[in-house]
Length: 112
Length: 112
DNA sequence: GTCAATTCTAACTTTTTTGTAAGTACCTTA
DNA sequence: TAAGGTACTTACAAAAAAGTTAGAATTGAC
Image 1: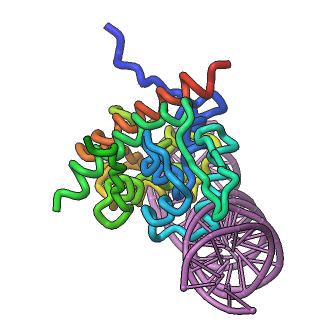
Image 2: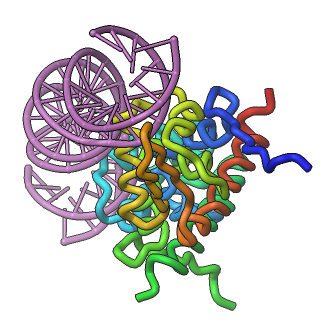
């Protein structure tokens, strides 16, 4: 009979939590992903959906999401401009995380 | 036939993502929860498991987690001191979130 | 000709977060 | 008597994140 050993997985460069957070830990990142979901959203729609974000932060985060290949951006050459954002395949794979976040929030924090 | 409507759930005080993130969005918060898991961990063990965190940040986060009732702290009146941290019932409910974070990281970011 | 709509961009400031370094307390062991 | 182990605490400084404000581009509507 062994004593129950504690599996210590030290937080180094192979830590999956660290890796995921490096993409997702921005203040607004998960919120934006949540809003886009499996739909298409325009810049202005996102702005209205997240009323407290500043324009600067919104595009800054969107640019970062595009750089990290979580979000795809499609700009139509129209006037006034139209730009659509949607999750990439990779981005869609983060949705289970957001779902759990939603579940936890609903069941434990918002029981109003 | 209706057009497929976009369900916009604006990010306000009832947003479950926002509520969850208000507890979990600290730089080290989810990492600490991940390390504790369903075990007991002492302060020093956590420090070694997360080598890059400063002592200040570690106890600051731990205090915050205790305040928010995600973590329980038990100090033994011994010399040298011994302090144990473990997740509360509420804290344990965040584990599915962390699990998804782990899964996403392993499958998409660490395929080394 | 002026204004509105939409998607940004840039400069600057403020706030928040994080890090650093040193110190405290207490007992045990050498 | 001095050093070591453990879990903090505090003050100060640096760095990172976020906010504010203003403005650019383009074309159609009034």
